[in-house]
Each structure stands twice: as C-alpha cells, then as structure tokens.
Amino acid sequence: MIALPTSSSQFKWVMTSAFVEEASSFLPTTFEIDGFGTMGEAAARFASLDGNTFLMMITAPDGQILVIRLRQPEGRQRTAR
Image (cartoon, rainbow, N blue to C red; front, side, top):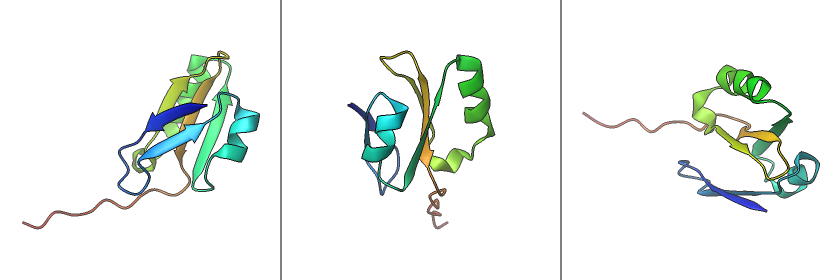
C-alpha cells in the first residue's frame, strides 16, 4: 500500500496498492489511476489532464509510473475581496 497526501479539502489522503490492477479495488470511486511503463508516456498523460483534479505522478516499487487523479475536478473556492 502507498499513502499519498493531497491538497484537496475533501480528500486529504489517497491509499493505493502499487499495482494498477489491485489499486482500482482500493481507490474510492472518486479517483482514477493509470499505470505506465515509461516516464514519457506518464508525463504526456499527466500534462493532458485538468490541474484541478489534484494530479499526482509517482514511481511505484514495481517500476510503473502511476498517474492518480480525481475523476471530476474539485471546484475551487473563491476568496471575497
């Protein structure tokens, strides 16, 4: 298992398995995870996603590069002026 902190106000931590096949059963349905064999593939996917989905990219112990994110972007709160 891997524990990852997020900057989300609603979801403070994500717990996932290092293996993509197993991780899908641990992640809440609000998160998605993709596994890649190369950093180039993972970086391209990471760059194409909405930054409001609290993107995380990590290298797992098995060598996969994982991209983890919220399924739907979390709304940002506006500050009053």
